[in-house]
Length: 154
Image 1 (cartoon, one colour):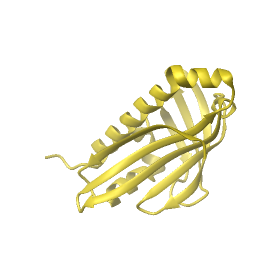
Image 2 (cartoon, helix red, strand yellow):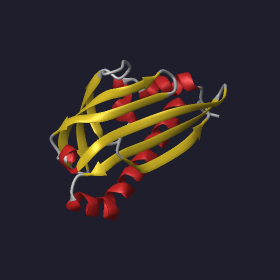
Image 3 (cartoon, one colour):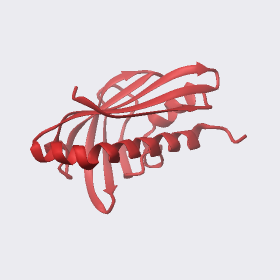
Image 4 (cartoon, helix red, strand yellow):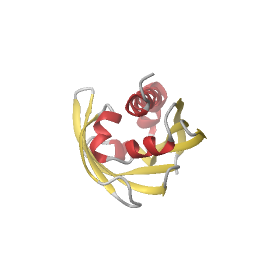
């Protein structure tokens, strides 16, 4: 696994099962991740793959990811298998992780962590100047989307 580059967490007033259903449902991925236009494949069995059509601020492409670690109701870890946007050439040992921690029947801590190693000096520079911040911002938006999809209105 690469180096931890960005990590965000949020406590959500929803049971783990509700959050788990959202983060393992291919049909809701575009509602969770703002960069995903559409997705196909599966997200709930170890070694499943998903193919995502991505729009990153007007730059469009495809990313194929593989589920390399799965602990039901606790953790998912995805890696990049291939992409058309050049991420797999810039980043090595990439992992996108969700961890769920039960805090109560209706309260869950959701942790989003991204690991990778920049592949070359240009990627290292870009990582320092902008990529870490962009990934952190995307993680925060993803957590807010999960919260909106799982919390019951008060």
